[in-house]
Amino acid sequence: MRRMIMAALALLATGAGSAPAMPGWLAGCWSEQKGPNWTEECWTSPRAGNMLGSGRNGRGDDLRSWETMQIERGADGKLVFYGSPKGAPRVAFPELSSGPREIVFANPRHDYPQRIRYWREGMDLAAETSLMDGSKAFRWRYKRQLGS
Image (cartoon, rainbow, N blue to C red; front, side):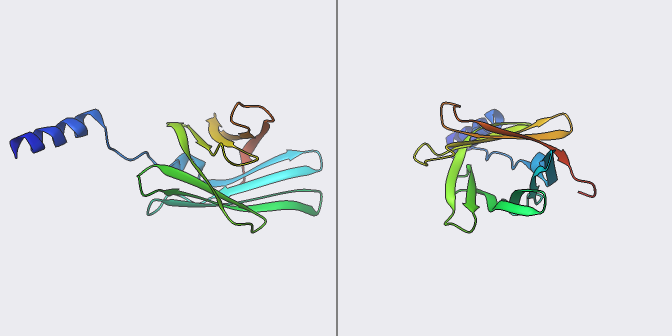
């Protein structure tokens, strides 16, 4: 019994076995405007091991695409990003890496994207989708929307 207690204390001291933190810094509504083209993304605050997101983009008054998203804790304790563009079946992207202001999800079996990365640059939110090797990258730099 003493050995089990000592092993548990050792795990707690090293942080091993602890679940990754939800990316609360992602919460809020964000937008990017490039001429008539716009992109918006909104995320709920973390609650019960879950964050819900939605995104849309367009040109002027025309909606081009939309997506529902979710970040949740998987059965193994790691975070998983789920994306569902235009109501399609959701696709899982398990967490690849994370830090205090960055998180990367990846699914090498998906056609595109295979990697989804979010990070903070000061007060802005940056996002990138790409193939696993970083090629075919698309980037966004969002500003926080007023009131969020």
